[in-house]
Image 1: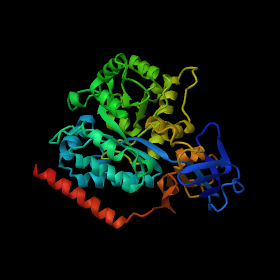
Image 2 (image 1 turned 90 degrees about the horizontal axis):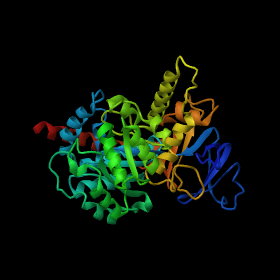
Image 3 (image 1 turned 90 degrees about the vertical axis):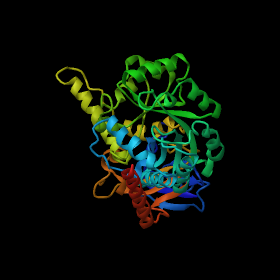
Image 4 (image 1 turned 180 degrees about the vertical axis):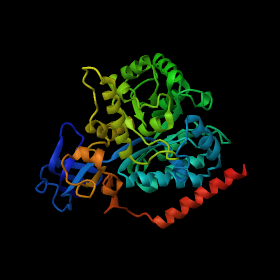
Length: 445
């Protein structure tokens, strides 16, 4: 039992709200209660008390889409010019050189980085599954870090592979679905159209049938522009749109496609820095389009080869871009700008992210009976003091250095500002050796 006591509690549960001074009681992997003072709660006897005075207790962040295997190559192309340059340099260039060990090292590094920055749930869009061993290594990395990991499996775009996908999904589900105390879940990953890597990767009736037979949600990447808009309307006509389908990016789509998405209740994953920095289709995160049809999106990191690794950056980028566009559109008129708030983006990064990953009943808010995935964030550090607005501080003031404690399913993964049980020197050695081996292999080709 753990009692987080005395801090400002941001629950992201509308029925509970925020507590200026409150407690969160955790038993094993679950949240038992949230309230102003739980020291006399019947189940608090004997609990370990964690004093959170001067701190914010909040849900962990949820990343809805990250290509985790690439992490040892992070920021190798910081000024990549467009999607095509990324595809050729990373998916056609370095991806074929990856061994199962490299998959493990990259995915583990990404997951540990996520935990360090307060991301307790990460969907790993693992699109370099060249062999069954590559998939096993990526999942094992999620298990070994203790993150709440969603492994979304997809075959590689280019290069040699065993052609085991999507058939190998049945084995993966049997071996890993719900493993590590339920922390690991699986989804099917696909692309929206055949433009990048051919028709075998494009979502449609065949892949939808695979997902249905295995009872898997589906995450669809590279949802861009007119071709994806046409595909979405075909999926709607075929009955393939629904809440178990996540469309990633969703930039440059037609109003008709958005209406079909809203009508079907699909989920959407935005990658604010990816859209803007790489320049995906319109280069504008599709937040206004999503909200207009009733979709509250999740947020994601995408590719660390070019982008930041943390959720704070995603929240601030989306907050700034949407509000800039709203004010710009109203400039010179008597129209009131329709601006999102810091609470909106925190909702996207927590509760809506969990829903997007198919885990809305499991995590995403500090709600009794949900899993105990939470953060303790210092609100008296140089960049966060004094605490005036907890949500504003989380979204606009804090960063990874302020996260003192990270808990996943009741297990402490970061304590006193340090990851628990991680040999940093050994991690550095493995990451560097893996990167160097990949570079050497690519140079030989």
